[in-house]
Amino acid sequence: MSSDEQATNTASTETGTDLSGTEAGVADDSETHATAAATTSAGEPLVSVQNLEKYFWENDSLLDRLVGEDPVAVRAVDGVSFDIYEGETLGLVGESGCGKSTTGETLLRLQESTGGRVEFEGENVYEMDSGALTDFRQNAQVVFQDPFSSLDPRMTIGDIVQQPLDIHDVGTTDERRARVRDLLERVGLSTDQLDRYPHEFSGGQRQRIGIARALALEPEFLVLDEPTSALDVSVQAQVLNLLEDLQNEFDLTYLLISHDLSVIRHICDRVAVMYLGEIVEIGPVEELFDNPKHPYTKALLESVPRATTDERERDRETLAGDVPSPRNPPSGCRFRTRCPMVIPPEGMQIEQETFREIMTARERIENRDISLETVGGDQIELEDGSVPSEDVPAFVDLLHERLFDEPLPQRHRERVDEAFAELADTNWEAAESTLRTEYETVCERVNPGLGEGGHPVACHLYGEAGDSANAADPDSWS
Ligand SMILES: Nc1ncnc2c1ncn2[C@@H]1O[C@H](COP(=O)(O)OP(=O)(O)OP(=O)(O)O)[C@@H](O)[C@H]1O
Image (cartoon, rainbow, N blue to C red):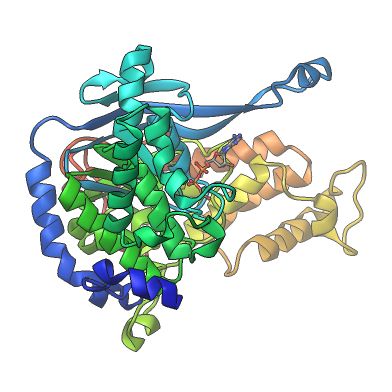
């Protein structure tokens, strides 16, 4: 932190909390959050997001059509529903690219949706006339991640904070100036700095300027899109504390977008977990951290760095692989291609690791992502692209070695051999079908849907109410 910032940050350092202490550092806030969640969840929501959908279209230009390219939908937000109650902070968490920012921008109507509905105080924001839309734009503001690029470098900070008041023609010039001074002080900056430019400020101070600008029109609701990710850890805690103070003072409601679970835990009342365009779990913050249900939420929590040596040493189920493309999301449960708890077909006894390896082999066959030539190497010479019949057993063995860490149990070995022999004959469809018939899982057939209740989860391991009473026993698959 710069000395400049130290001098002006007294308001928030009084309540400063070190986020780097993760769990220990944030635990004190939990009671306040739990109470807030309980009290704010009553009554009508301030913001209600219903089946929100935002698809971007690629290959959709005239030129693409002339050269015969088919348009491809990028399903950035794909049927997302949640409510935000007055005075609460709802966190939206998930890995990069899962659709958090697009959700925030679409619900503010900074981007048009391609489906679904968003209600603000009961009114559909996509059907507002221009008067209602102007009111909505005053009432619902955004703070972006990057305080460096979101402030115009040619404007003084006084003008930056005043700009929304000018645009909406609020008050007289003197009143606007007075409000700007008041806002700057409120966010911990000095009014002596009014005529200075953004580059003269540190990252934390610039984010304070962004927050002051967002508050200029006295909004009720703020979308905070990764408001602290560009800042040093010590400054992050101060900015979060400032946001909490401002929330209490001005009765604000927040949607906080973050990939950082320690930030979420520090400030949120409830959390929605997003994966590949969908919400997979939503619940009160403490409950979700103490009793995560979705395997994705569990994996996210497991991948948070731990403070103590003991915790660091314990086994972690980290998230394997990358998020699949939203251009072609997996069928059924979108997390199934990375899930460590995929449900095997009914009655099948199989180790989860073995089942996962067979699923990966299936995916590669379905994607035609195996080269017979490479598998055969120097040992097998293909004839017309196929493996000669006398070499099929050797080919099957080589493919087993490539795709499986351990030899398969006999029963599975026989079925997989059958598929690999079909593959040797370049009969991809038959190989696909042989394995699908035996190993298809409910996780790939059916999208589980989020369900209802206070802590719903979109996972076949749980019943509709999100409780695990009806679920198959996950322990038996590890
Ligand atoms: N204008 C666009 N055109 C095409 N695809 C887009 C566009 N904007 C976003 N996407 C895609 O939509 C998906 C969701 O992006 P989004 O930025 O909402 O995710 P995010 O969770 O906020 O990630 P990050 O934290 O990295 O910003 C990504 O795959 C992204 O590449």
